[in-house]
Structure formats: structure tokens, C-alpha cells
Length: 208
Image (cartoon, rainbow, N blue to C red):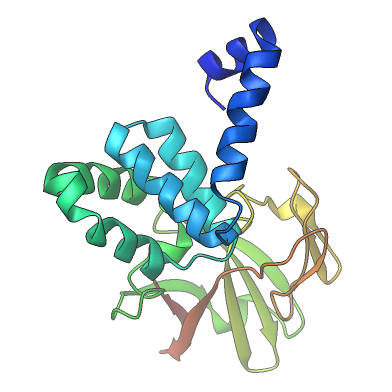
């Protein structure tokens, strides 16, 4: 919520309660994903960056895929025009969300050096920074699992200190992840983003 809306809620609570009730009633026949996508488009039309960031994250949290967000933007071209779509995509790229990485969208992506195979024992986990991206690396025998270090909830960076045994806990809202599978096991419903891996010349590489 913007500072202006927060002020109006405090200054005119009765009037604003009618306003929010009106908005809720207008969308009662829409599923959450559709409402979120419409909200994203309205923020792009108004070029409200803070609102766009807020509703984009909400859309992803409610199950919208990156492809669905991009489709919504492109289908709104007659109303938005190219300049506003480019404005939105520039912000989206600056947010550096895992869902919108080339590899996540099915594009080829690039391979990045992560760690040497002799630098982590089987069963071990380590957090590394590679090419501007935080990663958690977990090894199961000869199977390497590389996860984005950001929580899928609100893209909060998860530090290495958040790792306790086989679980990783986001410090912001307490989402808990199983490091072996990346699955969220408490307080949330979305897994860690896992990058494709390969081993070349005794080095583990990940693609994003």
C-alpha cells in the first residue's frame, strides 16, 4: 500500500473501507491469479513502480508463471503501448527474479562455474557467490544440486547462517526448505529455484 493510501485509511477510515469493499466486490468472480494480472497491468498503465513491484511479486506468489505475466503485458499492448511495456520489463529485469531468468523460461541460458568437485564432500552443503548470484550447493554422492539463494516468497536473500543440518530457514518470514530436494516443508508452499547443473573438467557448472 502506498504512503498516500495508508494516510487516507487513517484519516478517513469509513470512506476508505467502502472503497476497499468496492474493489473486493468487483473481483469476486475472478480467481486470484486473474486479479493479480489485472493489477499488474493497471500499475504498468499508471507507471507506478512501487505498485508494479508489489503486485508482480503477489502474482508470482499466487501461482502466476513468468510466461503468464509476460503474456498479460503483451496482450495489453493496445492499451499500454510499447513504451510502457519496455518500462515494466526494465524494472522486471532490475528485480533479477529467478522466474524470469532465460533458463527458467526455457531459453538456453549460460553456464556458470560454481565449485570444484573436490571442494565439497558428499552430503555437504555450502553457500557461494558466483557471477553476482547467491547459490546454495548440495551434494548427494555424484549428484549436484544448485539452488538460488533467494526465498521464493519475497526474493529475500537467505544467508549461510540460515542452514541448520538439512534445513534452510528464510530469516524474513520463516519459510523452511529441505536442502536435499529444495521443497518447502514449513510455513510456505513454493520450492527453492533449482538450476540445471553439469560437471566439466572436475568443475560443477550451473545454467541460468
